[in-house]
Image (cartoon, one colour):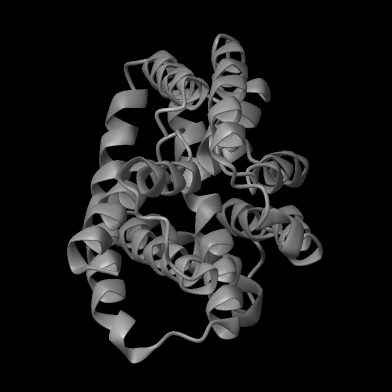
Length: 269
């Protein structure tokens, strides 16, 4: 793997992880479009996990104050204090990772076979339109109203998004909007919910990976690129959703999906 390829893929991952456009799908589409799909599958998977962890670092950097508040509140009982509202939200965020965690462990081998380009294109279109429908629902629920049943429902969305092209943030935003959360609250919940899922998947995958020493430089460059662009993506998304709908993201998904399907049908790639 060349360092330039790693940086490009890191940028793609960082920008697309927290936008509702599917980071895993875009990594596959980028490799497909540029012909960078000749890596050993194990190395490719390990790299994808590495840039996801880079994005995690960027998100933690931006959300550090929220994370600190929820961590302190979540462990209040250990200090002999009652579990306040923020503490309950913290444990709901942890619980939201359970559906994706169970699905990922049980269907690990099957998930690795779901990354065909045509399937990614179809998922971009279908789940983009579902997001559009959910976003048209009126909702003003605040983050402080987050409950365990909401966490599990959004967690199921994260589990469905293990299929490349669905988008973890897109699926959870769809569920959050359907549950009546405002766009700003939904986006912040999605970012916070993603932290334990990305961290857990990263540790689980890298524990099984065997990465040759020659691949570490591009891996590190990719992680650095995804960390920086991940921070930018969180900042930008929160800015956008305060005054705009998710329609531009849906349009982008549909255009990309249709373009890929047309290219496949024409036999160009």
